[in-house]
Image (cartoon, rainbow, N blue to C red; front, top):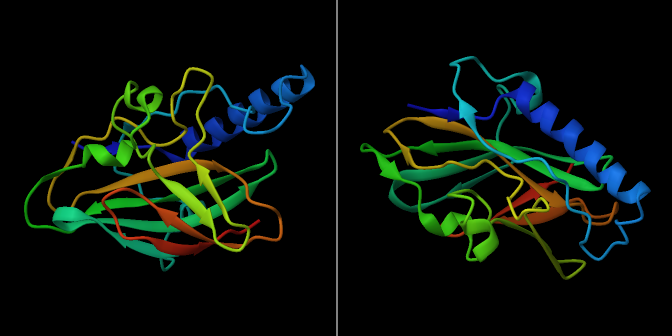
Length: 192
């Protein structure tokens, strides 16, 4: 069984996130300092078996490949700066091994608020070496990470579309390092 966050669901998530962020800003609750937290839940949906759209990086070389344990591979296909002040990193989590493998629990990170919402990629960070800042996966007001959730096991050769949303580094910053617990690090270029 495969879990997939479809392009249509991702666009809906981005629209809902933008609307929530704008509503928070209009209400005077978005004073900065990391208090702007969009409210939609980010969860994975079932794989329909359809091919990825051009927006998901179809037939393009990945921006980076991060190697994990037991044959796991995270292929980053896009890192898009959005108008709402965040960056959406999209890609595929793949099992390149010969046997099924459980997604390591460490990928969720170690924050209690994130862990209580199930296994995710909530432990991911973007590092801006030039600006000397680390950006954590965004969370909604209830602590749910804005990333693919419900991760369990990948069968041999199985690929799963994933995403992570982070606060956007300054506009002049294009190159950042993506870090995910139990995976190697990789430098990616933010577009948009």
